[in-house]
Image (cartoon, rainbow, N blue to C red; front, side, top):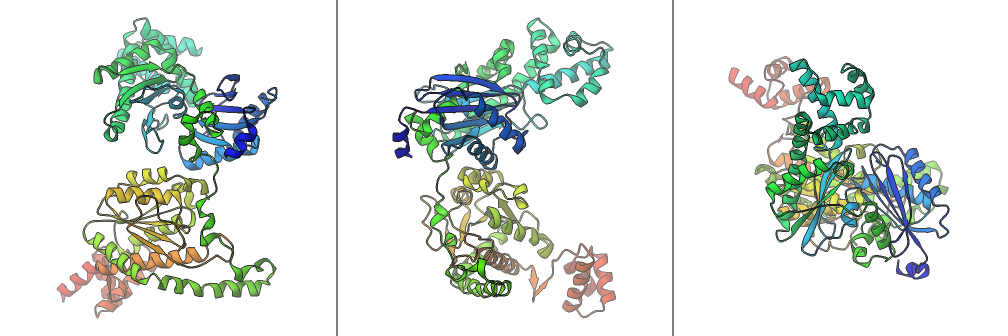
Length: 609
């Protein structure tokens, strides 16, 4: 990057974008951070915009800067809804397609206010955001650890937000109308503001109202509270209490690992900026818990935090550069040198082969899989022993992976309950990108070790558990994050990869590494082929033999199979007859009487005889 910075010198422009639920702000700045132009646009919440709408928004921003003669060289976008790596990667690709610059960073709109603020040494900023939605957020100085409370959306959370005040105002007015027969002053003011004539009109209005329409009602509640309306004041106090509770929880979580730092509470968002009475109520709740708390409205517009980050990409803000340059700019993947990314000399002419020859090539290539797995036999034996011992002592097995690796882990985990009759919690799969990534590619989700660490915490991994990270190259950041956090927790960690040349993790190297030398893929880099097949075989070995070790198999029969359909009930009857000499009719009767549990059925039949 440095050589390009020298070429650009001081003749470049940085663009900061902050997208919110109702509007987006874009600021163009020179290398010193001086604002050259500021423009506002529509909704910038990436969860509410499809790809076409996102491109349209970015195109509007680009075209509005046509009068600036110097091209934009670096961009940072802090977008509402960009909470995971897949969201950020989607925005990043859209920015690059519209603006053409690779100096691009994407963060959430919770981070830009922190970057904009000037915080005294020895303190840490805690953002209290209350606008249409609400959230409380802070992060460690290196950006590796984040702490958030609230921000779950208007249906699940957003406590203390303008939306919550608006919806609570309507509900309170209707409750008072039902119980007293009289609409309070607040209700009358709301109807006037909405140009509605009757509380009955709220029914149809609410069915069509957008989130922002309901949030705007908080303005009236604030005005009524400022004029002494007890109903409105009670609503605001209740919401302020809930917002402060989220804020203080966020602060406490940060200080568990940073006990010496003192918080500076930054009040941000349209509601806290515009409503003095609500700002006062929230501040009172904070100081009730922390009497000497430093509370300040965010003086610098938070979009300038995005500008700072954009400047850092080109070296314009040296103190921020380290925090931003590695995590969000497109960088060469460490997997590029992996064996799994090398070209297979046996398939160099794949595109020129006849179908018959290509099929034969793929069949022949499979022979290398069993040979490769054989090299790791001792490690697999040890791993089966570790997993079965964990099962015997109340522990669980977690698979963690991205893409094909993650899907195979989820697949093997999902087969254990019906095959062995175990609780679904005993073997679990963790996939980067979550549920949607099972059927739709979410490749950008694998790039964040922080997301992996967060998944390990959220899924409740303990020191009794075993965690197997699956990564063909051995370098997948998400998997590394899961393994790193799990090892710190005390779980037994294993990396399953297909790259014997991988470099050890800089810290928290897994307790065991299975580096299976399957070699380059027939289709270069397509690890769903040999690596995927080998993964399936190894996971089958681990769970099957671990279940054998804890008594889930008798001879070679699945004695705890869950007979949930016609095929499995027929299998249960056959297993029953093979384990005890009886007719199919006797077996079926015993199974039906014991909820198709083979163990209990056999015991009952033996007792009856």
